[in-house]
Length: 333
Ligand code: UDP
Image (cartoon, rainbow, N blue to C red):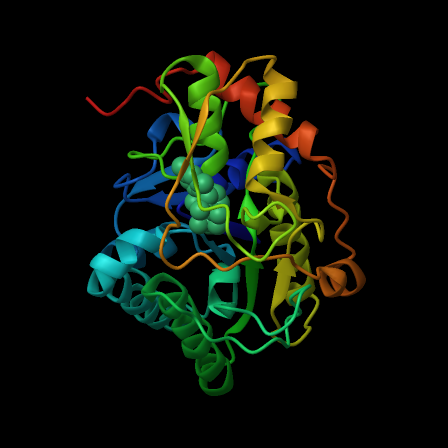
């Protein structure tokens, strides 16, 4: 039995692959188009295929050459809220339609398990904090909608073809492998912590904080941060859960603790010892006040225990990556 990781050259996917190899998994197969991923992020012991998961002949070849694959972990998606508002069809095509193409080939090859990256963005402006898996999902941007549609498509594919699935709804992912060898490298970078750390490095002049008039204690948005190694462990537990014959179900993955954008900035100043100039800017459209997960279900049902339970530990791991890779993977050519 082996696992296929789709999007294994991306930020979270590369940590998943690293974790699988380091945990002694005999064979790890990776597919990535390298449109946003980095070849250098993929552990050298993994078997790597470059291609698009929506290219069914390409995927047929991957499954034919690796008949022992019984489970797919799917990270390969576009994930920028602002871009999705401008280019919704790009998201519905790549994320949602791509899922249809993938499930067709999985069904052809009798691959019955899939664990995939869903998101807190499927909840939109939540009715309750902390957010539970049963909190109504009403996305307010095409990114969140594209992921919710993927969940729905999987629900019906489970019923018709018996493909069992676990959507893992991540909150804010931050941090890197603590030895600094792999980390977050988006082009362009839009996320809070990497930008703060680029300022600490001197690669950027300042961080713009988007809005301080939200309904939160200090007026800036509150988010729940989770480390990619803890996410990777949750994916492995979810694969185990499915292989044991359990029914399809979704889990939230977060630390269950909220930090405001200003608290993240302060913590980054402390961890890096740098001044990190910041300036207040207008609100960014589509940001809910507060997003905090209840991840009780993952802890109870999967037995998930996040190791990076301290925001300074998460920031220190991200800093190990950024301070040793000022230009990221440096493979943009
Ligand atoms: N943010 C910010 N300045 C930036 C980037 C992000 O103030 O340059 C804020 C953003 O408005 C949100 C929080 O940081 O409140 C987290 O945003 P990010 O893009 O990192 O993740 P998201 O919550 O969109 O997944």
